[in-house]
Image 1: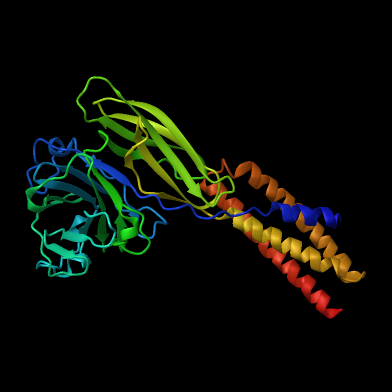
Image 2: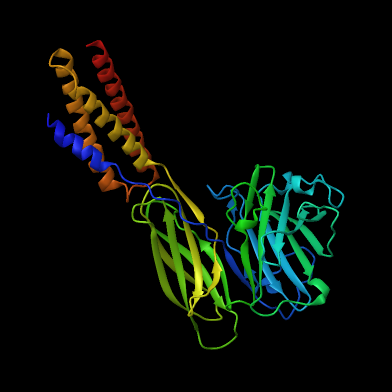
Length: 411
């Protein structure tokens, strides 16, 4: 058995893990509207057709996507910021709506929560919420005695519920073009135990360091996700709908971007697709590649010709079972068993373990070659089979290591 070769190869096979990428918050451009929506809780297409659309929500904790999608629209006029929210739910009859008074236990119900930091200091937020029975809650940070003037209306639907909200600007003075607020929008669905929101928070909706950016009349693109792709190892393809809100006849130049970040030696991947945006909504495709396993994220964005982000999604989780870590466990156990075996005195124990180590080495070479060849193209079933085989071999290698330790102790 070529023990020196095996030891060197095993050590070289253990890959490095890089630091987690810095958090990048989402962005949405909110257009000025010439006609306010009628606040009846119904998200009429004509009333919200030109509104800005927030990117899809992620679960609090950021490790997966919610089972219940939420769509949020925003627009404004000289007097109000308007928010429309559709909360998908296949069982709307099971919605929890126990709170009946303002500032009661609204946050324990099926509800939508809004957080606004208009001073951009990440110190204080206005916190508003409304449940599926249109009972309101508002607070300034944790102070529930603070009441704001705002209006909401709710509709129960066969496939969920919707809410429309009008938030008057302070002193009747609206924002200037280019002004920004920091914000988050969250949804509680207690029937499934789900809390999801626009930004990728770690523990709660109110994490001020992670608030996203709302740009009033920002770069004039209306963007909405049509498909995230497979969110899987290797090549993926997302679909994004983009339209211009300028009303001009000439298409606008823009870029549709996809950035993958994670614990990869190659430090992720980035792809940009040049697009021409007209007033007619067009669905564009952007490829992206997930180069490694473990937990990574993919962020989509649309930038104008100056590189300014008109819209950016939350970081969507791509959670690939840790095949690399399982291989490292196998390689580590096998190399440690080899080191211990090399210290044994010549005899029956050494020869017996040598045969087992040779057999294990052959199995390791085979699974390592198949992982290298198949990992990037394996579907979920094939990938799970590879992972199960590596886990089995890792347990066998650890058992060999324990035998070598016992043999050394017996000498």
